[in-house]
Length: 417
Image 1: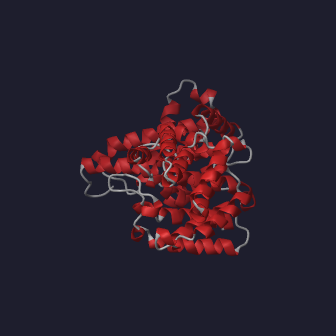
Image 2: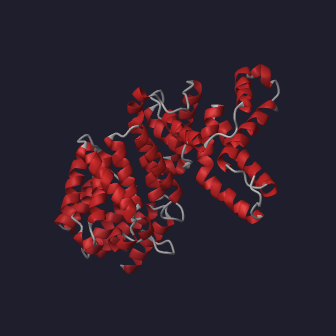
Image 3: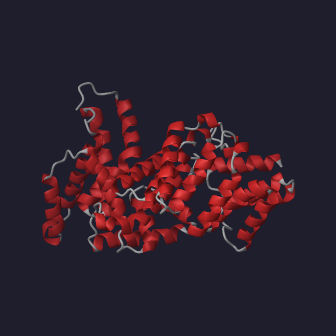
């Protein structure tokens, strides 16, 4: 413990910050020890409750994260010991918890980091249904709510909740190890792991709901996991994903006002972009492209690099961006990619050309419930001077938007019309 503990107020603030930044890492370690998602979740919360009680009185531990893991393990042990007939009804778990109680409680930070990545790989185990792998990881590893995950997949929360429950049961019943797999098993799970990291970053870079445009904790966690994966398996797509995240993250400070309102890419102060992240991202894009085995993440990173290269919005090479989207659709055909390409087409070939592409997408029934599709259509209509149609499209986008800054932006556009 430290010799001169901070004030009680400072300690409570530190505990809150620790919960935001470390809770899912603590949870991952507890899952590995306890092999039970629900028990680990309960133990993690018990550990933080113990911190609230003890740290103001005893002072801060030298390693808060390791302290929380240790406290959570022993809270779980105590809870199980209080159950009647514990030793006879659950001897295997009793022996496991006894082993845990005797183990070293001061685990190093790197081991806990490995637990987090190990849990990612466990949730992406081939034995788990593909429809459950990514939602399970987003919920249990990254702490996203079921509603946030459902929003990312454009599906109903109830449907997503069922997938997550099935995934948790499979990990438990099949005895899937919570560990980074052997080298020969890494490649087969890499695709799912990269998808998880990508979705976590997206939720952090552009939150699906809430008061803030971004969630720095999630995007920072995704970048950290991306770096760990590249260390383990420096495949072109892992490198490409890391490049994409760094290039997107470089614009964070310029994406909103001090009041939290959205600043569009074309209006951002480019001097506020993080040149260090841009330089690293560019280098990684080049590295991945040279491998000639790249995929969708690398192409998206290349698109982000074109934006980063433009000193002004007017100087953006939209022809290059549209061509990259053409290639991306071949590798990863999806309505969202088509929508992004439509914006590039509008900037390259004219607003009407881009609007025609969006109308085709919506005409097929794709993205009918996706607010950004209607917002993009409204913007093109506004620029074309078709105000009545733009107003209808903005109103449709407003009914679908869940994020407060986006809603404020859409209402501002409506008032301008």
